[in-house]
Image (tube, rainbow over all chains, first blue to last red):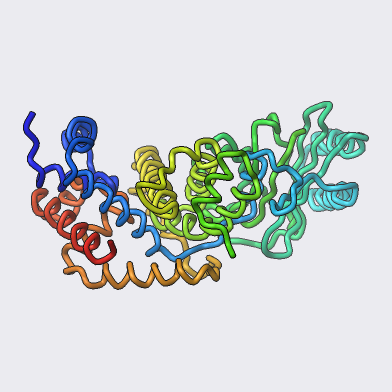
Length: 237
Length: 181
């Protein structure tokens, strides 16, 4: 095949910007394999366009990424606990105490609301059993505002509870998300009563890297669209 | 004196976590900025940022110093991943988004950062070069780079013939290469 240098350059300019599809994308791939390595002019053009594409990224305003990304990367490179990598680890007994206080508040908030008191008492008993477990861990979610959200985990039984207190009224739904392996999963939304909510979560914690809460529009979403209000890095180990 | 990016990448190749952390400190904000600009959703942008840096950790040899600066390599990597992610997401959300358009992330909730002077200087040069492009070339370039639109989509959405879109993008890239190179 005879290659037209101008045509190849035009393709390369769009290729480095990710702007090709279909036949043009296939032709660009062929040019990159068959022609560009042997053609000084097109090779030089490609390097020039690549440099421009990299520089274009600087036009976007720099934004400090959240600590959750930093923490996940730290774990990804095996830097757990090393200086320089911030990490929100599993908390100590204090977080369990906060969570237990939240659980009590949740029970009080729901008194008179749930018609079936037995259901509520069953959940309370299981939750307190989780909190009282000697191996129970608790991790507070960190973020803006005065709300307190804590994830409590019983590693033996694999039970998880999310306890939230002092949740302000919002225009939307407090939605809980677990992130990991490039995907997001939501066990549901928090439905605060007098600012207090409790949610049992059925999942294997080791599948996830991050837990977070966002405020989403009514109706739900397949993945979080809003910035996290609160988040924490989780570590099932 | 601070180590060069090239030296840091070489140390990353020897599994030096502190060198990797230094690269992250240098470029995370710029990389997250472009990921957010393209993806427009913090969750996606954070995944892109995480995956791009982890790719650098796992395969630092993918950076070839003879082909340009590490900054160029990294931001191109982030951009490509952001475009791929947003196109995947758009396919998934096409129906939902028609009914309920998602607004871009609010500028007021983002923290601005203080960064290295040389990065800021280069940013000014790039912005100035883009501002000097003819408006129609600038629009085509921005739709392709920052919105992740293909040439065909730009033609469809703007009503401009695809041949004209191609020539505008190419002309813009040639000018930027000449000014910034």
